Image 1 (cartoon, rainbow, N blue to C red):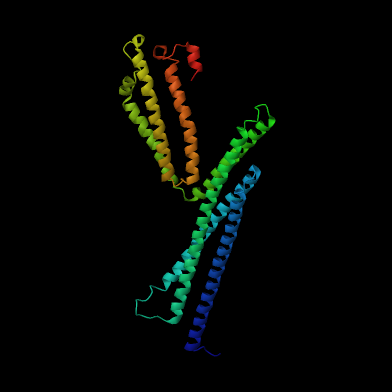
Image 2: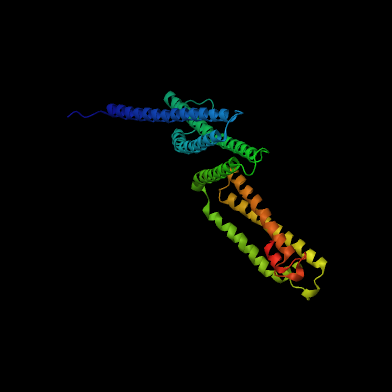
Length: 328
């Protein structure tokens, strides 16, 4: 049996290392080429959608179809950006294995220099592709917002068109279509938000909001007597409650309600930020819901204070108890 000499073993090791590097380089190039091809295809699809929705005769049905395309594109772009995290990490580790580049004036072997340059170029290309996918996702989100605006405009134009009577079946058909589209949009917004944000959410921060509520409740209970006296809920003689005192009670009650609604909005915003669940689109949805719910709560509270169903002596308007219970 012929034993291999040291030179032969060294050549075999060098050849194995070379083949491994070539295979890794080919694999990296395949990932980069695939990512760049997919990014170009997604970019082309997004541009087609943007062109389609810019037409003056685009219909609501076409807008809904284009919206579905864009929302899928946004999810795909985010998934592709996340998928490139591993290649960037691997290439960076390979580059770090070579050590720092030689100082100015120093030299290194041609093979090491070529490998360093190749890895650096690969890292730059993958990072650029990842940034392009993130940018593509942002542009898709902006396009979705534009489509939503166009759909709202078209719906309002149909509903409030002066030549449509309330008895016209087309009006009710458009209203039903609008409600269906509203449900679909809300579902899409929430589902996309959940898929994107839930994996990286800081769920432990959800305990902040109950803690803030508990703090407010404890503060309120500690100063309940002072608060009640200031609000005028317990006058010495209820039958002698003056008109000025009744008016002041309503004004202070409205102020307290406004402060509580403001605190609720602030606590909701802080909680979303701490849990990393905040996104521009979801923030818009949350603000829209708050702007709808808050005035309703404030107006109901104000009506209740004015009518005072359970406190006739504090009532500001001359109505009986049954009417006072009905109005709020």
